[in-house]
Length: 222
Image (cartoon, rainbow, N blue to C red; front, top):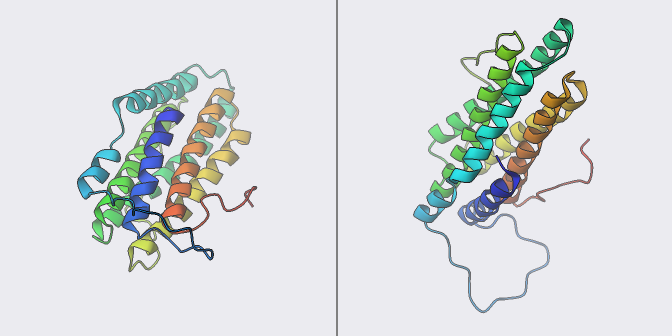
């Protein structure tokens, strides 16, 4: 997905889920009162804003095509390709888990409509990552890892429990892709991994903001 297009979606998504969650945690310093309270977005507006536009969808398809082409034209040795397959399969498993998590979250009926809409957008993007990576693995001569029947979820009782769990999943995904950048033998594949890491980090940032947490908690990742 084109970064500018995703950021436009992300900005709308953040405001929507913040509104649905009651604006997140309160700051210790009260803001100056405004003359008029901002209008709370309707569920219909939330649903519409969460839909990716045609341009980002096209860019996502182009990115997936580039990943496939990089894998198909890789000049790495057979052993290096196998090593790349192992790394990519690790990323695919993380995508499977993220997709399963968002699907399970939607099934709890705990998510308010605007939050659910955004969660389904994130799920769709994880599906795009999975499909592109799986195609790349096949092009490298490997076999893409399949999803497990079930993944572990923490005890979930509220919408915030779901958001907190999703933040952990997105953080795990972002770190895995950053780690893959330095390990992939094919540098075109590494560029794609870096691109996905940015998106996973943006997901986590939006979800943190919905929880009333700093969207970027530290200058460096531990």
